[in-house]
Amino acid sequence: MRNSRQENLSEHSLEVSMLAHALAIISNERFGNNLNAEKAALIGIYHDASEIITGDMPTPIKYFNKNIQGAYKEVEKHAARRLHHMLPDYMQKSYEDVFFQAKEDAYLWKLVKAADKLAALIKCIEEEKAGNTEFISAKKSIQKLIDDMDLKEVEVFIKEFLPAYSKTLDELN
Image (spheres, rainbow, N blue to C red):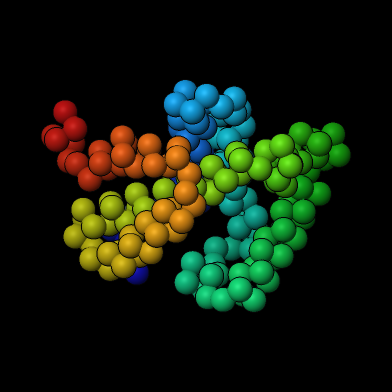
């Protein structure tokens, strides 16, 4: 697909981090949870770190079928272990639950996954605004993935914040 502008891994990771942080705050403030929003942001920063080793695989290939999806998840886990072991011993413990999901952080990881999908949806909206119609079907499939996640924090974000991404700067002011 043609893109109206380039995006690098750092920019994407920052966006996911900010979205994950917002979702955790929505969860705490609107639904009475006690999530660590800063940790959600940190997990978001590192969520694609394994791509430093693996490179990025296009979504249609990565999710083509269950076999490929499972194999790629194994490759990602191996890459994350490799990155983790590249750290000096005295730092490895601090990064363990950022590279690998701890049981108590399972919901934070779900929110980060949702934030990653929201970032993709926002990218589609931006591409459409730039006149790129190639992202219309991607937007529909990403929206379905988001809906299937069935997370109330995401529903709040979509209702209260997503419409702003379709507006011009003049409309926002």
